[in-house]
Image (cartoon, rainbow, N blue to C red):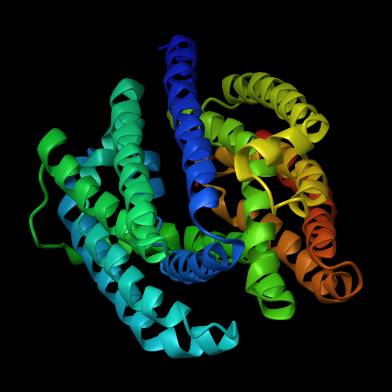
Length: 410
């Protein structure tokens, strides 16, 4: 069976979603940046950093497992749902228990209340129907598009309304909660089968065993992509964190979207042809060439027009973000090209290789970020992130070549 048409269709639908996502995201950022100050957005960033960290370190790899699995995934839905609910409860309790410590770490007492509220988000998300992964696994990308777009639209709308009414980051948290509630309802109404609260130990063990490298990958990927925000917030304060985090979003967003589009499609397609090495190699090379071209093109555009982009989206008071946007565009291009190989590694059940690459990236960033921030402020944070990516490139090349030459899938 040929999957080229499915891949083109998938890229089209996923591309449509990412365009919709970014258009909504740009409008959302523009409105919220005019309603809230960098200080308020910095407080919000603290809450979302904490949420993201705990979601990552408890990642079970269920979705990756269900896409990789050759058997009927309906057999795993109940067990996956129980694991997801348990994970949501654990994350919520950790956020509540650590709220005081986190607020003191960032010297931001105002963040404590937001952390208590954001704890509701993972608790609610835990009840999402795992069957929704079948949209991607079965290459039904038009349904994936409707699902992703509607969830983000509802969350964005509620966040903007919340920010307008409260004129505080509290409104943004309420948007996250509302979006999570909508997502649970959607997955139960639109996709089946609906899960039951029961699990089978043998299937649970299989999920955990396959997912351990995904968990480790998620932890180090989070360190790699978030440590710069944490260090900036700790060393320079909440306002510089607000500037850096929003510059990061503007500069890397389109590049991240290109990568997300191709990963969402190619991972599912590569998984289906993972046993045919010659065919997989041809498909990977085509994907890599197209992805690289799009990454470089988008990066050049953002770099050249950084000043008007910041002025239009963020308005006055955000001038310090302009040089950061330009610098982080280099990061976005380099990281995006390197990350385009991840779908190949994971599709061939080589999560270990992807994990080792991101560990190297994390170490490169962590070793350099404190002295660079001390010397160059938020510019130094961007430089450290770039260094982390560059030092990992030889490892990425090695593991890609190794994977394409291995004959057997584990």
